[in-house]
Length: 285
Image (tube, rainbow, N blue to C red):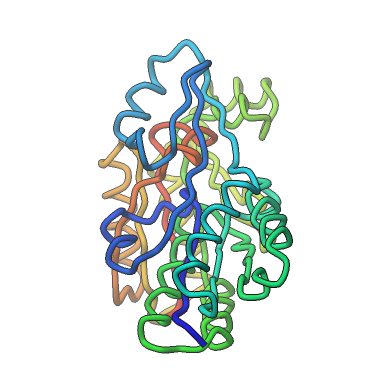
């Protein structure tokens, strides 16, 4: 068996330096401002995106890669090493057709496709990204495909994800909530606490009046789940470092955090959550 290669898409929100360090191949989704098309994490940085999002009269939209995009990447990797397995991790299939496009590409490659394993992360942002990085680290250490997939499944099962959005407007514009609910929520300064179901679908688990009460609720939810177990923490933000840093400090003060890393909520996920979003991803260590 050849070397295991890791493929993912840009919604994993893996920092560029980590992708380069582990040799992770990334396929970008697209972000569109009207007729202008950008490749996520390639020619539109999160900083540029969030600055534009606040002022643009046109709401951005997103689009997934095509099966042909995946075929091109898979063929390139298979030419380098025809026997090397490819583990291809993608945004939850309930949120995007990206996983389906990868699956179609695998079938188009016929016998060569037997070396490709397409995995539905059932997650988004770094809930997805942490699975990819873990797989890459294990592949570098010489683990088998079976051991990698088992470890990823275990990490996914232990992970708890909470998003705190600054405004309900982008959820409403994306069809996640109704216009009336968004208007009332904005008037009352309601901050919804979002999470992901096991399938990866976005769900509202609670809400609070104001950011501080919402952060306190997130910490309470995490304490109820993990107790004093040792956990790893990934902190993700957009353009509001104050909220992100306070959320991190509250989690570290109340839970048994053993390792911390950071990322930025990328342009595709940010299209649907908006600026001012912060998130925490916790998992057992």
